[in-house]
Image (cartoon, rainbow, N blue to C red):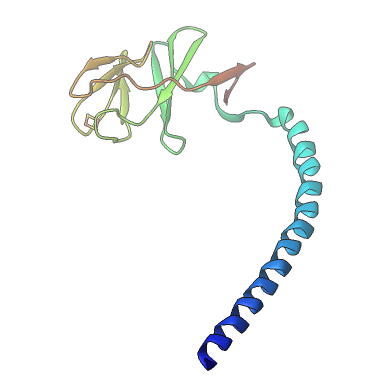
Length: 145
Ligand code: FES
């Protein structure tokens, strides 16, 4: 008898807490919504710095390329004025490619080679091409994105 009364009391206490909790989140939702327009304002100023400057066009040899290990990107210039960018992460087992030799991007780990023109596999063991990366050339600057 005594025990069952105790349980009933607990149930009432839980119900009361639940009621209080549903009020609080509703109160917190308003400040969260009011911060959304601020995020929009930040985005509207972004186009000025839309891409990160990666290199100058003069840094990329014609008929070759340059590897940017920090950004894990290789930028190539297969023909003068034609810039391409690829992931520098080898599609074989994930090493960062190590050098550009002639028209090939070379991975030092197992010797895979990728074409500077389109990232396609020239030599295995890699079987998949290096994925292309988006770059934009503005004047003599190469921008990421
Ligand atoms: Fe590049 Fe194996 S990880 S060849």
